[in-house]
Length: 280
Image: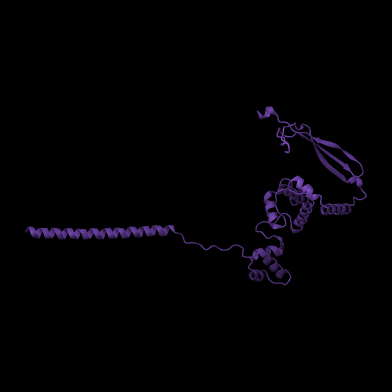
């Protein structure tokens, strides 16, 4: 009797263990499936990136020539060169200049106007007059104002200059050389001869050869008023050390005179002073 009850208890225990093992397997399977479902929901299908603007400025020019010269239709030319129809239509109708090679609005100055500006910048650079980015931007703003394309309340900014420089590879932004180096390089015979030829061209262009009263020369000179280097003790065979006693106080005089002998009264620029009452 005891043997029979022991064997039945053993069978019930074995059955319970099997049920528990099956339950744990099903729970593990459900958990793994749920985790896979969560992971799959987090993964987004990747979108293939489309390449932007597969055409260049030469393709636009060729398509424009085919439409205007060879009589090809807009759609046929756009399909031939891989250009959007509206992009080509804007160039053909004149809404956007053909010289515009960047997306967005057309440049403020057209290709001919920018060419004149670039030629002027190249000429003054060859004569030793380098202009900063802000000075070129201000010059272009004045030019656009004269052309009626800008007003005083809406000048050009440095963003315009960055786009302008990208359109003209001949222009480079370089660190300015020292004044001594520029003076030494500008004293070469080639630059002096070029300056004389350019001056003669300007005099002829504006009919100034017979109008010396309209030709003026202006120059400035600085005078140091408080600088008398002191005597210092040094060693034989060595140059004296530089003076480090303080900053210079310079008074600048600007003078001008015409080729006919008319002198303009000098203009003095004195060193500024700091108002101690305002700083406190």
